[in-house]
Length: 167
Image 1 (cartoon, helix red, strand yellow):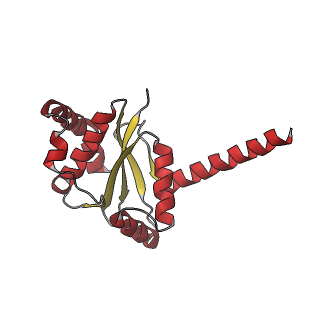
Image 2 (cartoon, rainbow, N blue to C red):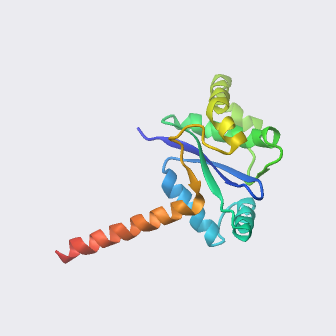
């Protein structure tokens, strides 16, 4: 079984927040970092936050919010958080380019939505209100760290392939 991760990318200086989910967290965060560094990110709000972070020298940060093997639960958590964050954290600007509708949330069923809200109040919301991880096992750090991580992994794989071909 694979874990699906719920995460936030935020710019503390400009108070911008982006929420996402993925089953390959490090690779997804590295892709966000690459897209932002190359001006190709799909979210104009996160592009603006990235530019502001570069100017202020306060890098975008990543915060792990939750994870589970139940993909539907994490996707519902993501949609619910995105739809509720403007109310829950009004001082933060949401960088996600699409707000889920109530219809999007209802497709999972009311019992599942109650479960997601309970999970959000345990882990994600306390993390977001403090912009700090609640649990030590949550992924956190500068967004560019993830780009460096995958670059290092790519170089190591290429070197290993060269060594194997040379034998």
